[in-house]
Amino acid sequence: MIPILAAVVALILAVFLFMIIMGRSRGGSGAKRTKGREAMIKDANKRLAQNPRDPEALNTLGDIYFQDGEWERACKIYEILTELTGAVDEFEVNLRYALSALRLNLADAAYKGFSTARTLRQDNFEVNYNLGHLEFQKKNYERAVQLLQQARQEDPDSAAVLRDLGHAFFRLKKPREAMTFIRKAIDLAPDDKESLYTLAECYYEANQADQALRLFNHLRADPAMGPNACLIAGTINMESHQEDAAISDFEIGLKHENIKPDILTELRYRLAQAYLKKNNISGALGLLRLIQAGNPSYKDVNILIGKYQELNANKNLQIYLMAPSADFIALCRKIVMSYFAKAKVKVTNITVNKSDWADILTEVDTPKWSDVIMFRFIRSQGSAGELILRDFHSHLKEVKAGKGICVTIGNYTDEAKRYTEARLIDLIEKEKLTAILNTVDARAAASATAQQKKK
Image 1 (cartoon, one colour):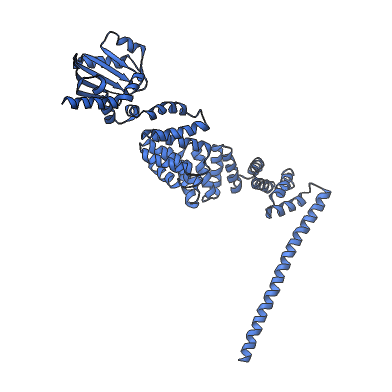
Image 2: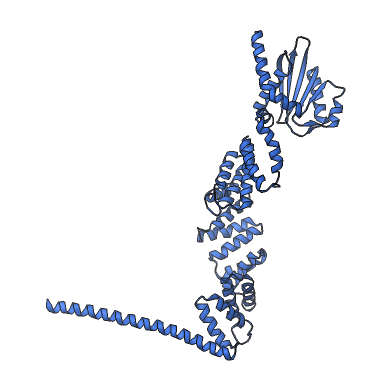
């Protein structure tokens, strides 16, 4: 056992010594490399002291700085070398100058270097891709596509090239071509949320709303793309009359932090419109006032506030203008039943013309007179003209009504008023109708009570 133990100990010591020797060797090698680099820099600087445009010395320094990622120094060296034509590899010098400038975000210098390099070689991937990317940033999308297509010939599976091609085609309003490249780019880089958003925009532009909505919904929670995704998702739902879904989209969008001011304003505006569709006037007004405080001239915000403030204070006015047809007719019946004091009113017919107006034919019996009277209730807030009153007068003749009462929430044109001067038609405009709406519930209740007492 002792000889075996001695052999094991000897082996361990040998390995230990070997490791020490190798470590020293490696340390010495690194030191030599550092020493060699410093010596090369020192030698090159000596030569430049004698000749500031020494091509070999500049090339030595440029190569060292470029390889070590010292982009500012490399850029300055290669900028000088680009002027020394004939004494250097012009393509390599301009390429490295451009790449160094690109790392320093010096777009103009990078563009100059890549452009010069491309005049020397047109089949280089780095040159064509980076120049195409810079053209894209300059919004020269046609030129960007040409260069990126050439870069793709050198590397068909470059995610960066496919991405920029897709985005460039989208900017050129060619969504179907854009989809092809962006889908491939996403397959190679699934975490590229911006490309996913652009793909959704492509679907939207190509009238493929379902696919677009699916992607926008996926992006709604993303901190960067979420607000924009919510805005377009909500817009798609509004266009398909899915107001509840649209409201959910816009509300999710507004929960994000650090929303761009223009997106924040538009989210509020469109949510306000969705609220109005659902007759949530108070909610809409709150949003519209927020917009008004930050941007008083935004779209028709001031007009909407003026219009809906009054509606918000008058429930019957809301019903008259915005409620479904059944609720509107019920309100009109209440007005008819309580319009004449101490009268017995019987509704004999109701005719609805889409959502424009309703005609209610009645038999009215009072202690002093009895007659057939037709009411027309116009829902539009604009000016009612002569044509609508001619139609009403014609209807009065058909049903043999003794008198007509035309009610509008807007007003009547001068021609309309002149038309009714010699005819048995009374005109009620906004001011009087508003007064009626303010009291109709009390009057209807009083009329119903009186009817009960008579029974």
